Length: 173
Image: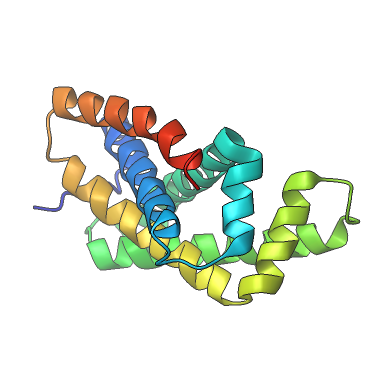
């Protein structure tokens, strides 16, 4: 069963949200390792920036979900809809991606290693990069909504397993 993770005041949701995002990122890395996702730039992203890449991936999705949690009652009222929550989070993510792309293109190549990788990824994937990020946001929310129904103990164990797997996965790419 999928639970409501839209209540900004419910701090107990942050653990399942973090887990949902970490497992989404692990799925993406696994798909990259398995050749399902084909992207030289994404391989370089994880290979060259390793843990920093994962931290950036995870935290931008968590921040997007936090912003969606904050804005949800102002946009949709108190009545929860998973679909509306996902749509709001994806809109926030698309807005972020667009603004971030503008920032990346305004910074001269060579000034920031991480921004240079984003420029390369934008060239490689084009609008597909936004679609991929949207799918990651949707997956993160769905997994988090499921994990909210699990106990604190189960979520802590999942967090430990997810964090444990990260270095093995990123050093396999």
